[in-house]
Image (cartoon, rainbow over all chains, first blue to last red; front, side, top):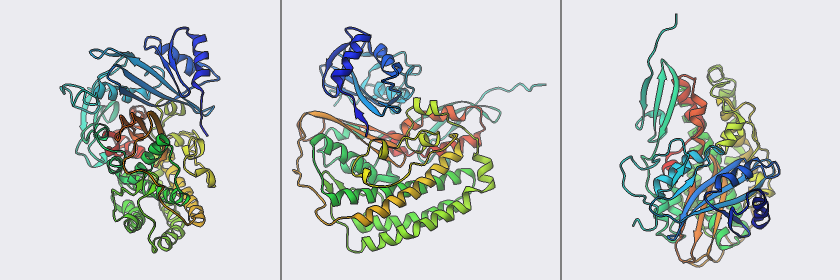
Length: 146
Length: 367
């Protein structure tokens, strides 16, 4: 059984590694600042006892006040999981650091999010639309699109 | 003396018999050797995630049928599991067993298609496919018996399944399960040691273990690369912890391993089916669930080991009748990330079979 790691305990570890990165925390998820996202992700991946080597799912929820980027991480070795989140308040030009350098599975998923939600992943090697055609105007999965 | 060649861009698809749907590859070639590849997708995009936000939880079930249409009942399964996780619904025992029976037959059916078309891509035109379809056809008859449909079943419901198995289903199913090992032996005999198959697939287009993990490959593609990761064992959902089965794992991650893993998985699915049919209890097939379900505010990520890999549904509820966010994690879109890595340095003909070995379904990739 995959153990869902306790967000509160994990947040303590993250704070030790990079202070003031954590914004909010609950039992299931840790929310970090978008500026320190890459740093935290690197910590989660490279710490041997955490070893999150498998980014299962990456998606975004549009809460109107802010976008929430959700990362579902799993460690194949320890068989535990974590939900990592980051928030982005700017609707005009939301920017979040790309994690393709750490987990290549983010490649298509970040492109999809950029395509449908309009979030720019800073540092993505090939950020262009994935499902819709070039020249399409707007980002249809936003709540205010239709 | 080296011959100077210029790179040549070949546009393969979206209408190409080997692309298993509407998929386009922009391939840069040096002679016959692939130097770069860019997949272009989206031709079948129907905006299912957006559509889901304006439908009730039950109305989404038929939409999920249109994802991986080769194994559409597993899509139902993953979705209803996610909703049940979100709303905290417990389902009756008999429904659990019926779901397992459906999911495992779907796995066999999907793997038969995958292997058949993989050989088609190899140049064994239609003959292996028809051998595979012989068995798949009987399965489709069984599904028709259960829910009246042969492709888009819409059989599972939040809290169970839509109706009980008909009287004539179990005898027919038992017969099919009893016959299946012999047919898999037959495929093995025809294919597994076939000289052409071995020459074309052994050591071809290897996906190393580290790359497979980094791109979050799942399903047979991941296991062929030597990673023993099957959600039925790693994170047992439904009642998979009650069954005895093995997880076949490949050694090098070449095209042959991806073929071999699928054949072995079909055998293991037969084992699960035998146990599930033997243990099938009597009783209700659907829990009492309100017609207009309003799950509590929150989120849930439900995932299953679909035939093609990890199929996940991420749902966010705001306590209304429709999900606030409905996200699908399609296994083959993410497995497709590996295609470029696998084929660079190999010939065009190898590209075709490697694409077949991933076993994509465009309905699921484009959504």
